[in-house]
Image 1: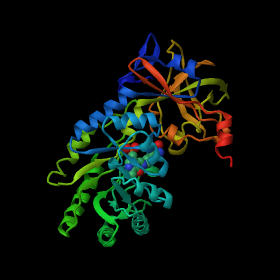
Image 2 (image 1 turned 45 degrees about the vertical axis):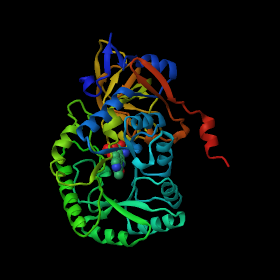
Image 3 (image 1 turned 45 degrees about the horizontal axis):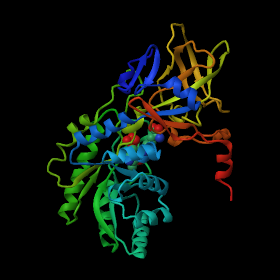
Length: 420
Ligand code: LLP
């Protein structure tokens, strides 16, 4: 069943049985730019940032660049007043190129390298979300060498179960992320003793694709307790950064929580706290802005199973393969026809290369296009060159017009990018 498309993205609709995003025909885009093709809705992204800013009027919204690092997308988000949450030197470069002010950039990650830290210190970003004692020492020495002060938060692990896929749960004690909340105070004291470090915040991020808001409440309560203890000990905590993680609708029956739902639950807990709130949403800003269009190459009936072979695979969208993630798939042209149960698979030489398994879908025809929904986050940004396949083009649509925001790669691009 198709489900209600506007529940994924209000700019997605059927007109005369054909799929349109912001008034632009997806069939036309597929014909003009080829497939696989990522298409993103600019208005949707702007609306999401505005919604976050309305729900959290006092907060700084730092978009998690890892969800989608296309510079044009990051630029739109920056122009809406958001900052950036980065996890690498590359993401810092993208954020700066997109015009994000360094004073709105926060930097998390368990394995920041020397050169990445140097770049971020030299750019004087807002805050390093430090994940270990070793990182504190290195940061202090780099800041010393560069004659700067590095503002930091300790990433605290509140030991909360975000009730999501284990691979994207980060706030549990056993995960590699952050510092155990019971040891946090010691790390803060150490940080305070380092000359080139300025302690300014507390950071936590409990996980991703969180549909039930209760775990946020639990985490924020623990963070506010820590805040009070630290303030009592004379720290000047100016920022509480609660990370990202708000989930989105992937399945037709799912209802996604809105930033307002989150605000309603957590703002009362933060009531008397004077520190500025920071949020780091990624998926909930861009996830349902994006669609992956693929073309049907072949149909295989293997007796016990039908396969629809399309030109997009785990190299373009790896989420189904690694998390067993569900992505809703609809045909670009709707026709009156029978349904079958089939696996929709890509061209990659792995059995794990599928976009959908045992999916009820219209009896597709060779050459027609399908639209894989909710492909704006962790889709292109996790794409690879596996099987020597160039990465797809990306197109941005807005109010009836469209433009290419990343060219389709060719073989030379892959061959030469590592040449020396
Ligand atoms: N902040 C930090 C420190 C993070 O590690 C993440 C995501 C975010 C913010 C943004 O979380 P979001 O709002 O997008 O949930 N590849 C996986 C998701 C990995 C998330 C990693 N960290 C997926 O495709 O589901």
